[in-house]
Length: 465
Image 1 (cartoon, rainbow, N blue to C red):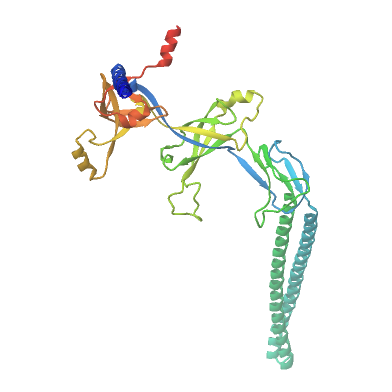
Image 2 (cartoon, one colour):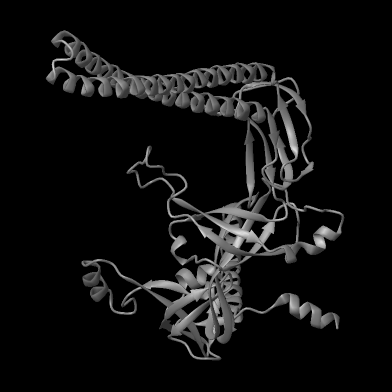
């Protein structure tokens, strides 16, 4: 019995101790809760006037503004190659030579054909002269025959000659007239033959000219000044000419003094881009350097859609090519470092195209602008009625008002990477809630208690001072 009493007594003390411990923990928790500052911890920034530059960002690659693809017009083996990749060339400088032997033979055949045609023409012209001489002879004979026949008319009237002699003179006149007509026809025929021979000569001359042109094309010369940016063939390699098909690309000549960046701009941004817009260019090969440029060309058609393969699928991303000329003055210092041509075709680059700029406008940090449902502060019943229609949202900011916040609807304008223009809804020197993101985007409501986040780093610096 005595042991049971002692055990009960011990259990009571344990229960009492546990109750005291729980009460102590609750009291400590309450004390800490009272000690902890109230409200959502936020950061703030004042509304100020700033200059905002709206940009469109895109990426692409560097290309020469002028790059000429060199292909051979004639097919054959490369027997001479005068340049290497990276060489400078000028207009008219020999680049390569295709085996010309077959073309020399063709030219010789063409010359022989031309000489034959000229011989035929000479014969035709000689025939014309012969026909004309024959015609003159017949004309003289006809004149004499007519004179005799006229005399015979009088003689027949005086019965000096017989009717047979008169008929013979008349027959001579008629025969010579027929011969004269035949001579005239022969002259015309000879003239037509000579005309045909002349056409044959012209055809042979044209053929010979074409053959000589093909012979000249075996020597490939530079059509422009520039640098051999790409060399695709070797000495002894056979190439296909471009006369009847797509030929072999032998090399490319580029003007590396004038470079451009070709970038893909999405269809959502392309309407904001204009010719002559200023551009900042960053090249991956040059860290921490920004080059300047200007928009020179904007594509009218999407780069990834052609008329032959046009698709009605709108899930595909639609981009437009924009060309940006790099300002040479912006990379003069790079050139002085021993790089005559600092940019090489194919280098990666990213650009910021300045599409709009406004000065001295009221602006706030981008992260301070968020969205809320319209009439969010109304009763739940009213909000449920509103949700029966199409749900609508509006842009708002939260303005510090003593220890609470006030939600204000805003109308925004253009923006850059950090700030956004506010057309209405805030005043200068208003203190806007800028963070944290979770608070601005979800937690904050009109009338919510807040407390300003202390800058620990700043406090530590002050302590060190």
